[in-house]
Image 1 (cartoon, rainbow, N blue to C red):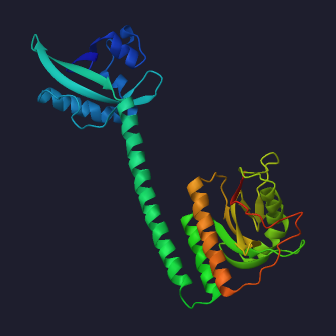
Image 2 (image 1 turned 60 degrees about the horizontal axis):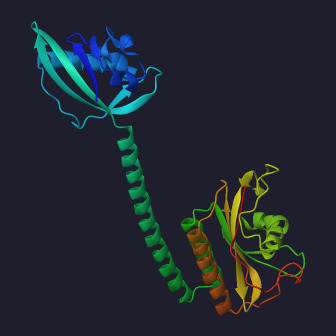
Image 3 (image 1 turned 90 degrees about the vertical axis):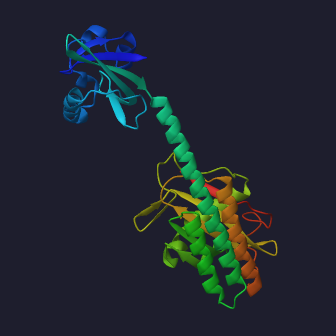
Length: 307
């Protein structure tokens, strides 16, 4: 254990090798210096006051007294510590003994456990919101609301639960005709029309080729999409199928580069399935989305694109 002894004025009289090593000093470099040399500068004035109060009423303070303490190494770096105090008198002079423990590892473990609890709490809350959203969507699907209203609700829910900056449903057409906007939130129909003609069809080609891993243009350093000054650096796409034909897709756009978990992709697919179900119920005419050389009627996976 690291041990230090100081007089009632706070001057260091003794320090063992373990304490010197803990604070990155040589033992001789500590002797005679005030104990505050081992304390972060912002706490030193308060510590001097506390030291004077302790001298007036000396007492034993065991380790782990609930105080949030920090030590300062010779290089200025800080680390969490626990300090136990005891005292004795020599020739009527008060001597204070301090036993010091570096609790960095314990703090790291506590922080890790706290993060895990927080993540678990967020995950439980997210799952609850997903269940609530699915229930709401099912209620909407069974209602007499217009198709447009239902699609608007689906893209809004998808954007919220998948934490996207924008989302939309679009319809593919034969050949190279621009994709048509069906519903969206966070981005306007005019913007989407411009995007789909240059970006989404190219992405669709990549999907068919089996490039299911995240794709991107990081070599060029350019964003995947740029619209009215907004750069989108990641997207998640879910093809919508009607009677084994590709009707279009559900797209989610993100301004920050990111990767998508399997669960997020499955959630996006669920929203896409709900949109496709409503489109089928509405009796939307199925059109072959593009010539077989570009897109075919085989099952296309949800696809991620990111920088």
